[in-house]
Image (cartoon, rainbow, N blue to C red; front, side):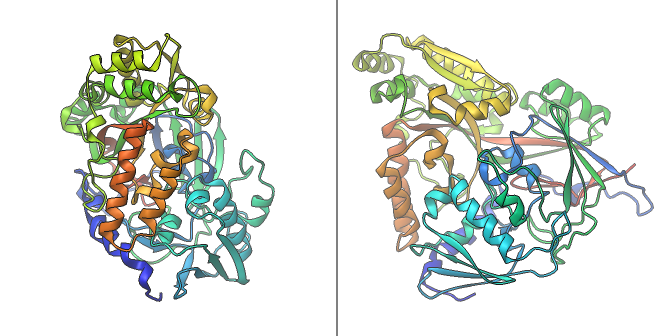
Length: 524
């Protein structure tokens, strides 16, 4: 790949990626006691997950549970290795023009889709151009970009303005640019694709609504031979069938991992963490994973009033919110920054004067100033994610105490996601958001996430992406984070560590950005 002046931020990402990867204390697959060579392995891997995904159409959804499953079905031109560095997956090579406006990708040959069709440039172009207009991140950060076919195995990407994070966007796991056959893309409906056909190590075999998703090994999978690393490298499809079972009841999920009904349980409730840590049949994994965030509807409803938004922020006691959500103070940290606290390039505390104010008197004064007359303020949530639900109830109580008529509406996760995407149907919502590599990728600055469409955000993102130095980029991010608090668009509630449990018989598990299962096997 040709070097040019637009690669300056790569050094920053390289320097922080090791910190990102090291965040938290997670045992690796090497920490699990090895099974003797003569051991036999199960044909099924049973995973208890906390919610049914709304879709597996990765570019269209911000759902982590959807992306985690879809990553086993679909692949991308670039992905992330264990150090959070972009690594080629379906791309064989890449070159960047000297002006930074043209990217040329050679595609690996001999790759087959699950339907037997060979992957060619026409599939890449169709998939990537759809991603450019369906991904809420891509259509903002890569506006007017276009993929074009050069020959059967070569495509180009043309961008309007050179930026340092183009490949990071292609490799990012959130709303990732999944490659599907051209025919599937052309047949896509407005709500998404109708067939889930990729090139990954597993194929979608069965989706029993409200019960499970079954993936089956792709016997024709053409794996890279490089070492498995994060989402990159070798994928073995070690177990024939993977079942993602929707177990929304947390006690059932915990009981199942203890008895062996489930080999792996995702989203371990924090109140069960200590209990499982003493179970000799279970291995626990935890890592600093993201931020629990409050989003405020600035476009519609009563919170379009800026004084009322600031009253909400003034009323918050973040310590009480995070304790209710995560139980153990060792598993969360209070800090106003939206980015990973281990990233020196992006970890800033601007806007801290608006954070964790716990000032009811100020909140009441702002309510008077806003002319608030008791209009309902609707908080939408889901019991499928206990930390989000618990936080919502505490916030409701804190708002009521200062005189805000806060009402909670709870839905199952897919319906919650539908409500969240429609600004007519919510005033506040709380979600747990995974850490992202760079500020332009976070949900708080995504106009499709919480209807925040302000020139200050657009200008701030451009200032970060097109900055002449790391120092300038950080200064631009400090200003943008301050704006998010000053405008009352969103607030970090706290930074959290997520937990996952596996049976001791599980081998090859990697708890990366999402859990990675393609190299997992279970001893009988």
